[in-house]
Length: 341
Image 1: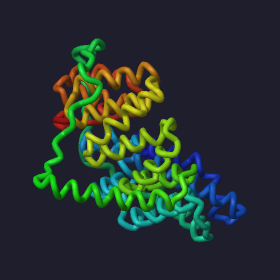
Image 2: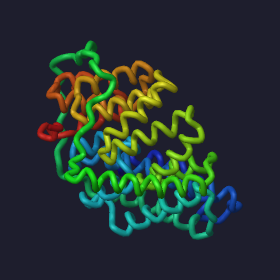
Image 3: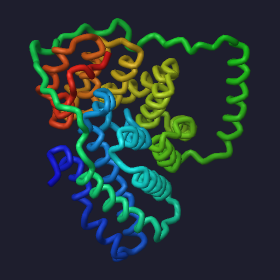
Image 4: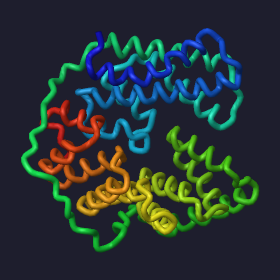
């Protein structure tokens, strides 16, 4: 019988059991099957993330980020699970193929009969490996909370952190490269449509980890729809992930002008400050985001990371006492020596 951690990872798969069975039996029309494959792929993604979240041998920070698709890409989840030998190489390859099918179908690509068979095969194999794989040999450790989190952290003097130096030693070469890219971008700009398809393609590329390609789609869409929050938010996320903090900040400013009380925007500002080591300001922003949306898992994760990275482990433990079950479960299973530096 599966343990508690295994049962958690199995829940998303169990929700799509009927859908997977219909795909396996070939009972769905092509239009229905297309949606079913995407649905099954999403459930597989969720199960893998839960599996990584509950994996004691993975680092605490990785497990903390596992449920957040904006913090840990699907390919990174697979890589972590393979590194700890929690899933087989054959399953990882099949999952990667399924996610590619999801991306293709999400972009309006052609549906093939092999997609249904692949989705059904992956769900069966994943459930088998979740149940049958031996548990990781690392013991669990329960947290001890000794002090409450400080709910009155000082507000930052500036709304954005200073950009981190990019490390260019030849400014003229950088300028020439930028000029060339601007010329190329101008040519592409006038030759590519900028409708809702731009947004959909950008999101699909972002989720696949192709950040540079995704950025061009979001940029074109943002230029055509300057008051659309989503494009600016995705551009900020992309620049932050690529460590281009000086480019992320302007996009966040635009997003805040459009929707200053949007939980996603405030959360992303917290992660920008966290990545640039402004820990107190990051914690304050994550608390703002949780006041706007108490169920914001990313903000809970960010707040814990900010407190731990600033050396406030007791405060982080206290926050986790009030966090959703998905976040609390991480600390309950984390060994004491895995606290983020």
